[in-house]
Amino acid sequence: MILSSIFIGLIVGICSLGFFKIVEFMTSLWIPNLPTDLSFPLETYDYKIGMALFIGAIIAGQILSRIDGNRPNGPADIIVASHREENPNLKDGFLTVLLALVSLSGGASVGIFGPLVHFGSCISALLSHQFKHLNKSIIMSIGAGSAISAVFSIPIGEAVNNFV
Image 1 (tube, one colour):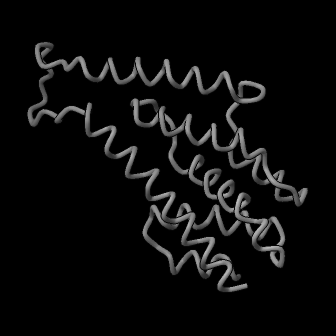
Image 2: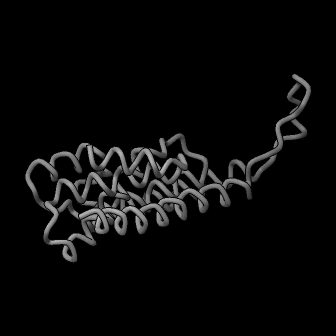
């Protein structure tokens, strides 16, 4: 059980760090340097901000139209699936994660930790067929916790969380 948890946590942690690094890289392409003085002259407006938001919104709209019910999934959907001891809708789950990735990269005001919890749970649910000795709620909680702890760089805290 411990080795299975470590393996799932490792896979999910690497994927979550990849998600975080992609967002960090994409925003570095368009985010402006903040001025050091308190004035905001209009001639310093950078068109890249508007273009990033526009392109991100177009792509996000296309992704959202492919999700069942036109509603992105979130941690609440993972909790419901966990209580029912069933897999979450993986297609909608990964589309939701892609939607969050595009939205965050384009500059939308989206939280990063909700999508990471969902991402970690979906990856661990995808891996769950390899670990029949663990029930679904344990596997999904390992994935959710691993995703957050990887971004916060606290793997020891995650190990304690999963075994308490």
